[in-house]
Length: 223
Image 1: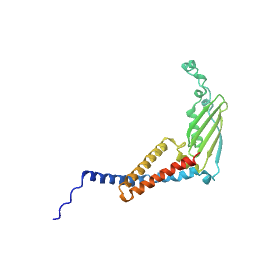
Image 2: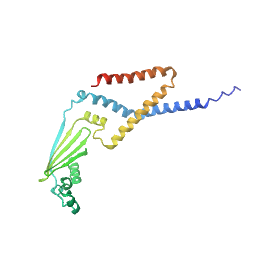
Image 3: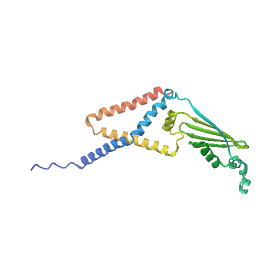
Image 4: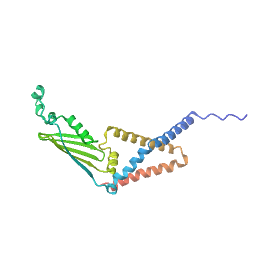
């Protein structure tokens, strides 16, 4: 009966297990985030070179309509508000929620509310979304409004998604999660490099060369 091979030292066993864990994380985090990483890679190009892709002309749609006068007229202020002078505040004299919901329902506006400005004679309601903007100008006396919707095209949409501009909190979380995943992928790849004895030193040299090149280009090429 052949002799039983000696047991590996604890440190060696832990090192092997750690390497397996890093390999598993690197492979499956890479596969899980492949679509997101590819998206941000491609949109990095479209964002950096807008002149290559912005051949699409802007598309605009205009509409008109009427708002209920009751939503625009001054509401009787509460006594406490009158004492504080808040009854003269135009913002408190307009039914903003009803106006915004009317705009969404009547014109299928899909952007998020970005601004609602009120003065004595006019309300300006602005909606923003990726590659999209809608602005309504409402006359407070007559209730008549003019709405302009602007569509900037597919490339503008994906560029705004890349920047997280006018995308809402859910997409913002996705960007944060994607950044964390890419950080883990980079770190696990670096850890695995140190387990490859023949490629350890060349790999570190190449990594340092890439970092130094980025710094040099920044110092020499960025105004």
